Length: 392
Ligand SMILES: Cc1ncc(COP(=O)(O)O)c(C=O)c1O
Image 1: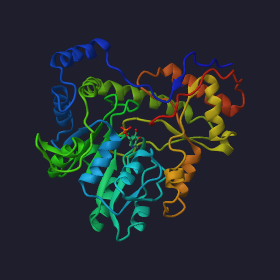
Image 2 (image 1 turned 30 degrees about the horizontal axis):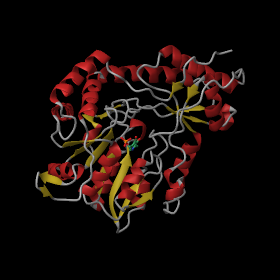
Image 3 (image 1 turned 30 degrees about the vertical axis):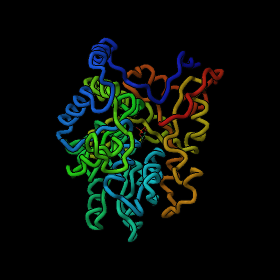
């Protein structure tokens, strides 16, 4: 019998820098007594990211959701925006908060990103932009989407919440499209506790984004637009700076974990691995999605999800249900039957992956999955409960 893990293995676990390193930074914040409002640590984090991404067109926020809302508002996006139903719900919420109508179209089956053909079919006179998601950190079909956007005069925005660290042809994913939003939520491989970032092509947008995230203030006595409060604070910036120092090591560990999963899982009937990254893509290994083919596996995805809990393994069904099936979005019309997205949502299971996950733990997770498939698993008592549902 395979013994359950002594402690729960969740789908992710945040990286934390060594405490002594972080405490040295805290001392600086204590000495400064400057906690938020564009403090010195935030400025350093901004400059460090500017160097990392080789751009001045960068703006930091207290989370990715508000970053995306502000991006849409600052760019003056209105009417209809073509987007994916296969994402975390914040992508759609950001449209809704701007009174923009989301138009859901299907995804392609290899990387689960927007299907460019479906995007083109959905364009109407009211379409102003495409909001695509580099879901799981996989790049969208960048050239095809850029071509459609150019031919139809649409803005191209990327929700790159999952994609920090992904590169395409030696260039960061941040530099494709008109704008990219990154989430620095602590479930992400790069994080600042909570946080968000916009990187954009048009430098003229920077001041607008800066005003919008700080109540619209231009100076002490001038409010030039009805902004909100979306500022990143000093603690967040400090965490971000320290995590960034360890980024290469985080990416390397995830790469090794993915390699092992792929080797072990490809032997198991009914476990379908996502396609290997396209040529020219340096993937960040943000997630480990697999599809469970019920007939070949002998058990449904939901049964696998439930049974793994008995071994203290808590996977997630990202992204199920589809956004258009949530009660608040059911009235939105969808384009086509979304067959690919529905199939993915019904079959997908995202397995645990984080830098501190031991390779021996990956071996055990794969053994449990294999024994469930073979029907040899001896089910232990349920040993724990999942975490409450949160932002991915
Ligand atoms: C695809 C996607 N978009 C947007 C967000 C929102 O980012 P945040 O949690 O930083 O607000 C998340 C996740 O957290 C996400 O996964």
